[in-house]
Image (cartoon, rainbow, N blue to C red; front, side, top):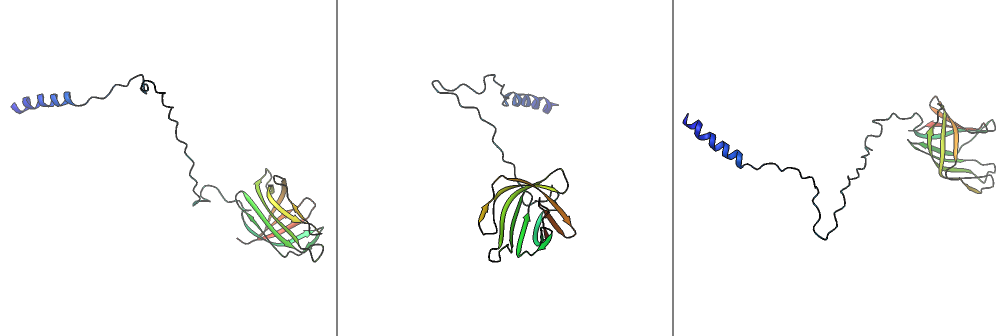
Length: 179
């Protein structure tokens, strides 16, 4: 009983001497020193979204067109023509083509190289392409530069193990998936 009465006053004294919290002041932040301009307000820091390139297919399904395609056949004016070499690389947003084929004149091969952005349209087999940069040659060998920003609609037809890209005049180019 004696211990109880001795401890209580000590505990009460410790509680009274403990630091107390500050009351908020209405004039925060404090005014600047005399003759000095106030500091500018502190803005929220800009936070850049973090891209997870190590997880490219984690959140979105891959489009069936995406991949690397090798030219195997083309049709011009209803007849099938030879193709020397060529590839088309289709990524999530970019489509890159490179073709070599015999030209109208044997000494002038047909060449084409172009980079496009691409997107699906509302129709299942139609793709909209927009030229970023590209070039092709004509029968006499002159090089034509493609106008950046040119938009085209193309029909991309998925075949059994292949892809056929249709042109406006009824011609088409067929590809086999490489990767």
